[in-house]
Length: 355
Ligand code: NAD
Ligand code: DAU
Image (tube, rainbow, N blue to C red; front, side, top):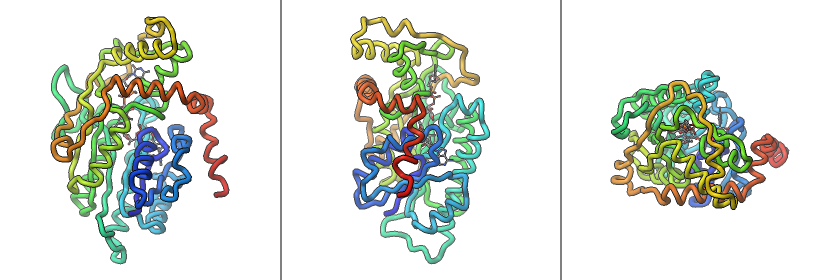
């Protein structure tokens, strides 16, 4: 099976690519990524020479490129993660989110349809075709003090990011309902773990604690997020990819709600211990700052459908996952240094040029 994974140089995508390359040596994995600021090929150093892995630098907004790639490689399945993913950036530059998240997704859907549905010469492989769209719980909007998002919760996005992801989800379903494209969608809660770009809350705080810089907490830090270790997300994608019914949707989450302020306090405690600083040192860095406009109060995912139907469950607790994450950042200072200095953006030219 030839599987196209988009956005595989990013945070979650790199874990998904590694998981599929290592667990399915019989599949050929093509990683298509534009290498925006969020794409980092150093994330995949350990598997880049495996014979079943291929990297393609390219933009999903480029329709001609996608059509040519589908024509040349005859992908049998797509796992689509490429996106602009940071809510704060969507507030300052919403159009970029429309181009990649909406138009890029429609381009991909169209290229898959042209090969799988419209081309009479294309033979469906022994298994099946599948367009797997990786989405977010943010499409459901914001919860009050109680309740959880289920697969039936109506969409109610608030930020340009979540509006663009909601739009892309609608297009994916439209291609299923209108053209019969075999699709599946999953909506996951907040991920954390190794290789997370240090603009997002957890890696930003790890980096700032290390460097004795302020820890900016939006508003009062009362907003709640439901955190999942990134490798558990990759395992969920594997299970859904192989076993979900075409046309279905699954929520993915760890049943692990935390107020932002409590996450940051826990991180401070772990970091003080690991850095040999007296307990309470890092908490002094906490700084309350102006709130994010339209800041969703609370996310909580009900993933019981996935657990019941496909037997997936998270494998690490939040405390274990945070310890592992902090250990990874402390052991990979060079990764963090290259990201913060911008040196990671030269990796493609240095390693791939002329290949
Ligand atoms: P990320 O920002 O870390 O990575 C995105 C990747 O997509 C980068 O490698 C980037 O170079 C690539 N990309 C961006 N625009 C592109 C384009 N036009 N063409 C090709 N490649 C492009 O994102 P992430 O946090 O790993 O999220 C991956 C996916 O998972 C996204 O679709 C996101 O909406 C979804 N998601 C993320 C989370 C989370 O907590 N991070 C939770 C649920 C769902
Ligand atoms: O819920 C899934 C979503 O989780 C994904 O779809 C997004 O791609 C991903 O970025 C993430 O979105 P959030 O906005 O929840 O993540 P972020 O790390 O930016 O923020 C987490 C919470 O912390 C949020 O309530 C805002 C707050 N925050 C964030 C930053 C960067 C702060 O208080 N201070 C900060 O500096």
